[in-house]
Length: 255
Image 1: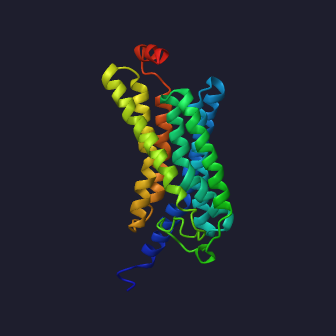
Image 2: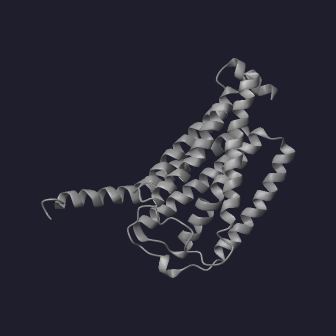
Image 3: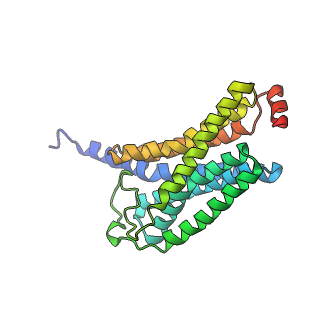
């Protein structure tokens, strides 16, 4: 057996798995917090509620990544799991999507949707932090990302909240990207917003595909997709608020 599976190969495999399960989530978290700081700095300089929401969304993204890295070393505990599930699984897509809503939708309707999202987020926080957890799933075993789910929550009704937030976030992000493409196709204006919103949608949705591949047993897919997603999100934020040329600047002022 040693000939076919030498000790060095086993050691290299362990090192690789530690890198995937620990280094990648912490890297994604650090990048997300740095990007959040950059977006929020822009918000405080120039305002724009979409920047505030995107910055908050990236903080949520970073919290989720930190909790996954923590799990890679020490396993779940009650607080870390609840933080991961609330910010990483429930809220992040919806809050990023709300930023796109503020960029594209009339303020009156954006405020209404924001009020609903805020109340829903507070309610979700109470439910998640008040939920009973299965102690058997609060483990420290080596994982590939396929175990990152809400199955540890045994209180009825808590996990059913997640699809509502994620559907809203997905519709906002994908719908915002599609609307931006339509506006550019029709009026040939705001190309920077079109590119930015498409990138934001891709970056926010990418971890969902990574999670699907992880559940299929493809090691590290979730964490790689989260790292790529964080980078693409930030590029999208920067592109959406930076006109490409004088014509684009003038169009931005008119809209």
